[in-house]
Length: 173
Image (cartoon, rainbow, N blue to C red; front, top):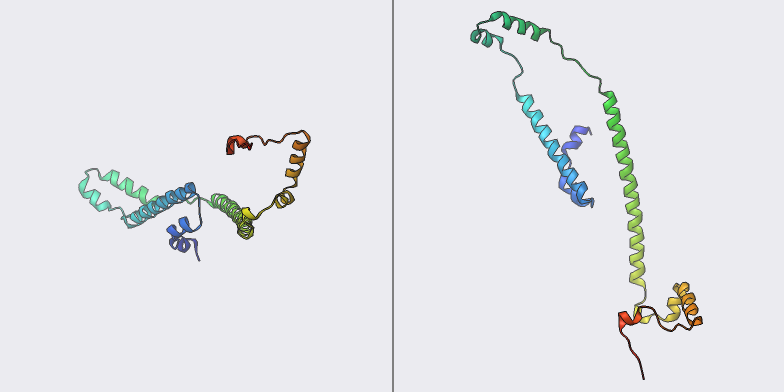
């Protein structure tokens, strides 16, 4: 499929919604779409314009025929120059390749993050409710807590810093 045909078959709404793009990316795509449509409209308008010069009309309207002859001679002698744009095309292709590589890297990164999040979600869904956990279960999963509690007990610290602020001060007589 040619680039021109591919460009006409882009579903812009699906592109901006289904890929989960950031808002600034969606805005940049929207701006690109508007510029693209404007350029296509201007190109279409220019293709429809008449390009032939009617020198007989100017001969009837203007008195100085020598100027018309000079302009007609220059018009017939005019040869448009062609420019070698291969360097610009190569740089555009390089930017495209770089953007494609970045998009692939981002896609793999998003897929790995998504798989990690799905594994975490599965772990959360299959874990026991917090009401069923025991102190031994918590210490087994977080051994550093046991070390902290032992260190506090060795220093005769029975209070947990910030506990009373968070849960209130409760004493039993």
